[in-house]
Every structure is written in structure tokens, then in C-alpha cells.
Length: 342
Image (cartoon, rainbow, N blue to C red):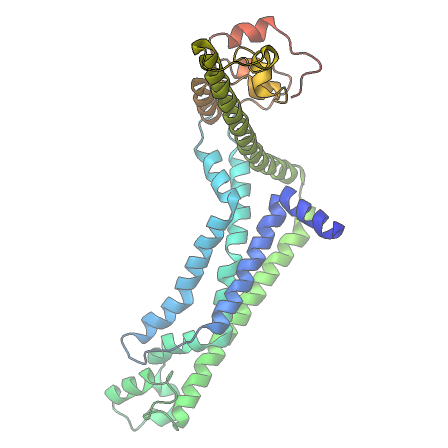
């Protein structure tokens, strides 16, 4: 159980591992979908090519879009590309690195489908049976052009009466299937060769730029994730304090009307003028600082329009000077306590 727990924690902390897992899951789903799919070519001259090419290319497009939707980094990349510059400049190299990473993972499942379809050959035979040159086969010498086109359109349907026991059908189908498998294996070899060269040649170049772009792309992803988690934490804390404040106000109203007698100790503990008592004394200082709807809206707006610079030596109070009219004064006159939880 400890090993499974450690593996689960690693997957939670590593978005790259999660994305690789999703990529493998989509690829495995692709194999399962293709093996369970019932292929039925229409065997009509007008629709064979449309059906075969549609089945060869449409599912990969859908799988590609699913890969983009499942990859959280694609949304982070678009947000990083479209965000205002603010106090932080945008690096096109980081966006290109994130785009490359997203595309590599999103293309895995579509390529698996295309390779399976080519190696199987059914889609290729259906799509190009009507495009075969009849002069390559001696069995068509005694047929008229219309008969040849009708015969070629019926080649994917081996149970059809017209081509059931015809040697010509077997020859044309075998020719198209061999051509499809040749294209599939060539594409497989090309992809493996490209991956091999990319892995082997990468250490030959300077790794500084690559490490920098990888680091900052991971930073952008983790920063947005931590911001979302902190917003959820603040929303829970803010709701808790509002509920406590409401009940404390109701107790004060009841005491003012003389409808209920509350012990002095309890009244002092639940007084709405005591924010530490309302918060239970367990909130962090950076969460207690934002305590109104206007401040929350302004904070979220500033996070989108003007993200803070990547410099921890700058005073944090100056980044959020627009939260209220006292922020700039407080940032210049007050220093944070060394025991403050940040």
C-alpha cells in the first residue's frame, strides 16, 4: 500500500507523468476501438473513397482534439500566450516548448489509429479500389469500362456475387493491401527514426536553453495550479468567516432585542468585532488580508492583467497595491513579522 501511495503522490505532483499516462491511455483506447470496430465498405464507386478516407482520417482528428482537451497544459499555454504582459514579460520560446510538448502527446493516439488502419489495409482497399489501373491485371481484358468500374467498386465486398470467386478480386485486394502495409511500415520506420535521432542528437547541442524552457514551462503550469488551490482555500476560509459573522450578528441582534440571554464569556468569544475569534485563529495572514468581495474581485483582476514579476526580493505589498487604498501605505510603513506564515 505504501508503494501505491507513493506512486499516486508522484503522479499528483508531476503533471508531466499524468499527461504521459493520459497519452498511453488514449493510445490503448485507440487500439481497443479499432479492433472492436465493424468495418463495412459501401462498395459503391461514388462512396468508397469517401468512406475509406473518412474512416482513416476522421477518428484521428477526433482523438487529436481529445488529446488537446485532456492535456491541461494546452489551456495553460493559450492563457500564457494571450495574457497581458503586465510586470512579467512573455517568452515566445517557453510557449513554443509548451506547444511542442502538447502536440507530441496529442498526436500519439491519432498516429496509432492511422498506423493500425494502414497495416490492416481494409480502409485503404475500400478507398482506392476504384482507382486501380486495370491494365496491370490481365483478367480485365474482356470487360467493358463500365463493367471494370463496377467490378473494382465491388472488390472490398468479397461476399458479393459478382466478385465472390474471382481471381481478379483477390489479386487487386492483395495488391492494395500490400501497398497499404508498405506505407504503414514506412511511416512507422520514419517515426522511430525521427524519435531516435531526436533523442541521440539532443545531447550534442547546448542544453542551457532547453533546461531553461523546460523549467519555466513547468513553473507556469505549477504556478497556475497553486493559484487555483489557494483561491479554493481562501474561498472556503472566506465562506467560513462569513457564516460565523452572520451567526454572531444574529446573536447580537437577539441580545439587543432581549429575546435571548447569552453568557458574557460566550458573547465575548462570538463578538463580530473580534476577527480572530470569528476565524477561529487558524487562518493564515495572507488569506485574512483579503476580506471583502471588492478586494477579491480586484485581486483576481490584477492576477490576470498584471502578474507579479519573478523577483522574490521585491516587497510583496507593492504587487497588490490596488487591493485597497491603504495597501501602498501599509507596504511602505509596516514590515512583515519574521514569524508570519507565508
